[in-house]
Image 1: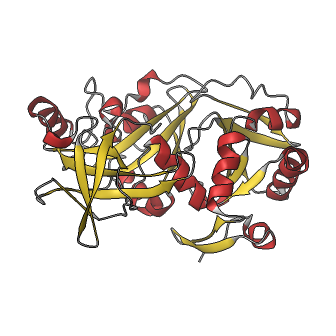
Image 2: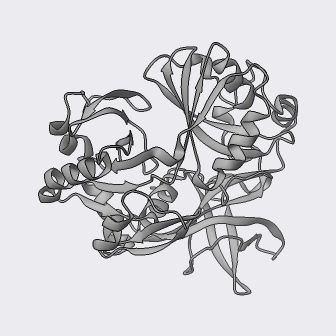
Length: 361
């Protein structure tokens, strides 16, 4: 199992550790509900250094990104980022990712899921017919997500960069906590606001940044947060988790990602997805909340009132902020309207639920 530069700090803080995507990662410190509330109401720090980062450089870098991703990266100017996905040849999803424009038409950073680093690298490489310079910088890149309504206010004294006024999906680079060349991005997967900071772990940078953040933020209630709360936070927002809600067998249109699928350019499986858009899909990812008591879990069957199978749960939890059980799942399109009654098969009992708007309220 791999460690991040912060693993020993997590253990020293008493984190419950577990393997995730080949890394020894903190699942929780003081408890998922407590950590979830800290992020929603104040601020918390996630170690997400297990994520993958690729640099693509050269005159044909944008062309390569355009061919392998579904969104239109030509819209990006310096300091802007966008959410996108890598469609496979059948119209499924190789991975979802964020594309950062470091230098327009020249230098880009792709941030991919930890479990898909090698898969994504190999996938993009096979389309690199124009000798775009590619660098996998995942192993030397640290990533901390400082999320919550008070996150940027807490961090601002550590830098001259104006991070409090960073617009969503934009970023800046500069000196942070005395460390040079830190990229601060107004992104994150919690829906609570905040930033993500990328930096190379050289000359003790990881220690320096972690310590500075907690020395400043600790007295203001800043807490370390594990992957357990990261999951409940993203689920309340209805954000997809790769491997659960989207994968190689689900199309962006089925997964509610039509908004990142731009048919104004050529990309992998464009024709298949255009046909899906024209004809309509037979299933869609929906959010739902439980009406009767029960917690939906991954792979539980979704049924209609007569007990016919109409879909499957992809993610589910007891939502800490909402005090109710919620989930995501694919259902036949006839059952996708908000407030449609559906049933989750929990240990051979049909438990009533209803389709909800996203994000969950």
